[in-house]
Image (cartoon, rainbow, N blue to C red):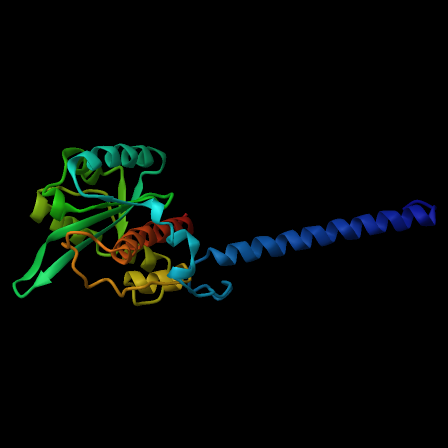
Length: 238
């Protein structure tokens, strides 16, 4: 220390300020780590629940692309392929009707990209799965995330002869990340994203001539939530 009292006071204040900044930074790092840790981590900041209808990210109609014919497919698949080059993961989900004979053919295939853009392929209107889309579904380097995604892919194979590869079941990722049961999509969204999903439109006519805005929103968000969960669990597993 210098013999100059004023200089000593200045140096002391500087050291204290630096120390306070260091402590504040360590607290910040701890809080950030807690927020992204496994959901059952005792140090994790409590999730604040929000209704999915109140979260802007899940309420962007312009990000929902309904594909009903071959021409729309061509444009959609070009954008889908470009998205997969940047981030080779898709949220995948399927919708179908049931009748007294059981499950009908898959009516709607939803694929969501990391940006939240979601393509909804109305297979009941198109009548088949285009070869380019089959290639994406069969590409093992493009991961398809969802709850029970292997079952969805099996139905696509049975109904439209589309092989699937790269399936990632979110239930398995959630188990590795120690997320408490149950592991259905709505429960995972609530526990890991702090979102309460609206399942009102789960049972509706997916073969209707025109899908309602509520159906479109519901279907798109199922796939969108899937890829958001994938990103959270993938981060925690690294």
